[in-house]
Image (cartoon, rainbow, N blue to C red; front, side, top):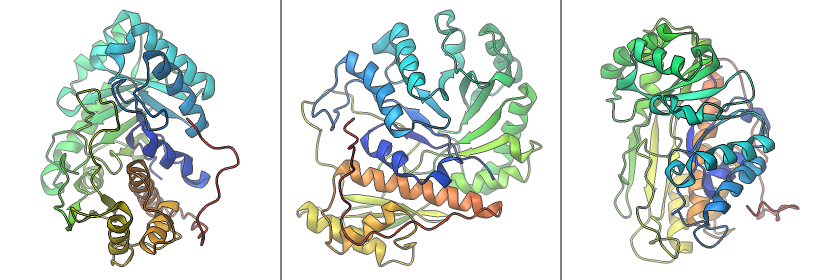
Length: 370
């Protein structure tokens, strides 16, 4: 089956989503972890972290939340603040905790001689992130050569941010870009990366809307047209998020404004976006949101994932409403589960249902405090 390469912000909710994935699914997932900028409020610390804390905690948290299996570490949002020395130190600490961590670099990064020793420890030395408009055979080959690398040392992430994704429009163009990337060299994997989720919440207060997952449809349509062997290609999206990765522009003493009370529930072909009313307490608002999901035709049942069970329990007022980080966790975990199950079904691979927990979970014996 296709390996799944979700790009996720390495924040509290997304980290816990990765941690809670069952092992039989984790072996088919290789996430791109996007470290948030230093100005981001950290709910686990209760404040904005210091520079030294960011350098240390990034590696420590990878060890706790993704200790086994390949992942790609994207430090682009903190590179200017931590500098080249900081980048190397973060990667060093991360690889102590998980030797399969591979750094992500742009074509511009490949031209920086100071970053030539920023490499993975295994056969994959680097993940090269290339915008779909930058995929040109000679320019990419030259950038790799300047960095002392060959395509066979790398995974290439083809970023289709901003590209039209309607399958009837995009399939041929995506297939052509796959073929061009394949002409560059024998990459370890050619990874499609895109999302049709809008950058602004598409649902108004109290509304439920369906947003097509065009990236999913465009990818599979393109695979029918391109000449690249399926085993050399990977599917990627931005989980339950837009491809426009944005973080707050200003530092805040607290966690920022009030989070939007909503969930983004992935179906086989769409997102079912359910948003709460504008007024009320979290317990009432999120109970309503979760009830609307669990009572809908889109709900996959409590055993589909940990997130699905939590959505049911919140809807029944058997547990509290959670926090903004938990809502991102449920969005992300359900989405990843949806994609892995569907990729598996295409290859005849099935995954076991998850245990249904009737009562609120007991605290972990060894809590994940960071």
